View 1 (cartoon, rainbow, N blue to C red):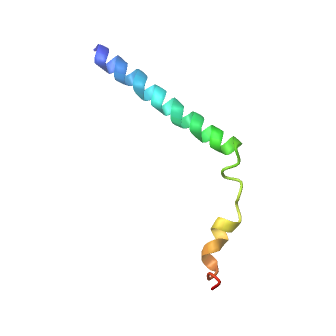
View 2 (tube, rainbow, N blue to C red):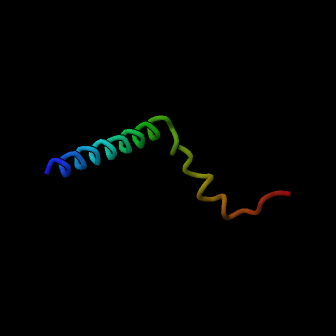
View 3 (cartoon, rainbow, N blue to C red):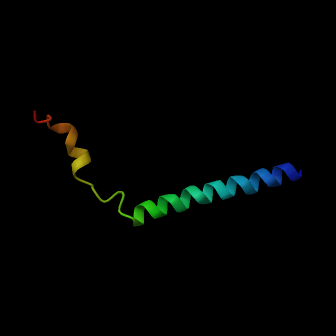
Amino acid sequence: MSVIIFLFVCSVLVAAGFLLAFIWSVKDGQYDDEFSSANRVLYDDKK
């Protein structure tokens, strides 16, 4: 039973770490470019 509690606590800590990393990346401006990536596939590369 103690192993299940330990694994549960570890999984909650890992999930919280990923959530904090996501929030940090959003606040840092990682996802601010909304135009170019969506439209980049429509145009050919210039040689």
